Image 1 (cartoon, rainbow, N blue to C red):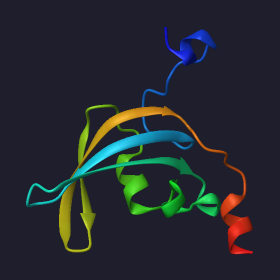
Image 2 (cartoon, helix red, strand yellow; image 1 turned 135 degrees about the vertical axis):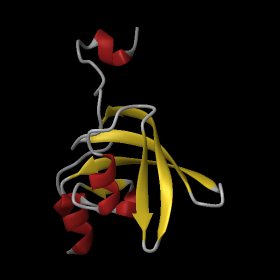
Image 3 (tube, rainbow, N blue to C red; image 1 turned 180 degrees about the horizontal axis):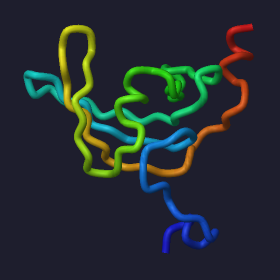
Image 4 (cartoon, rainbow, N blue to C red; image 1 turned 30 degrees about the vertical axis):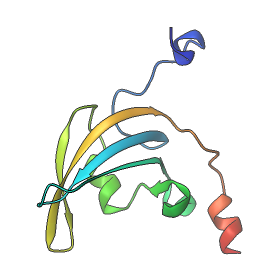
Length: 103
């Protein structure tokens, strides 16, 4: 039994605000990179800290997707494929860390 099941919480079924997402991004040449981040409100975004703003093109492209889904995501003139590897509850603290660093 997972920790979420023990707590009476179920894992998120689709990518949404305040979820932790692991993806594999592949370019046209087959180069793949795995990324993991929490999707947070834009005001709390800090890409290098692992917090992706909900209004970013990548977040918009994967919102509503489920594990195993593959979507095409445009990066400039190039397109890449994004495969959803896992979705879970947000892992980090959200609430103003990015604003504090900017101040």
